[in-house]
Length: 143
Image (tube, rainbow, N blue to C red; front, side, top):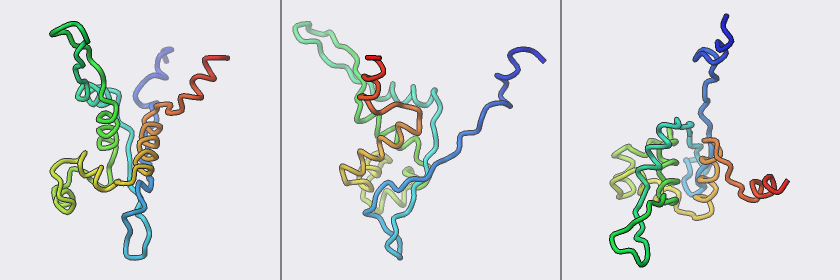
């Protein structure tokens, strides 16, 4: 067996989906908030989402010159949409019930509490391997 056999696909752990209550404003017949199901997205999908959210910002004093910047809020919303398995935010019937026409608007309509949305965005970022606590990163850099 060669030294790189540990890197073969058969040795790669499967990424399990995770359940999370995204909002308490949606309840079932018993008054319980349903769990949503989320998956980790691939690095390639993350790059696509990031590229879809690049906007050009004009450089002051330099006519016709722009610098790219990632629209962080759009990126995070798209990351949540791409990670959501249940509910299916692309479902036309579900979108119609909220009077929206796309998955991002549906997300905002379903999770319309700012604190819950912030918690959900933190959860999805951490699920996808991002460190969301900047204070921990600063402390690590100091040491």
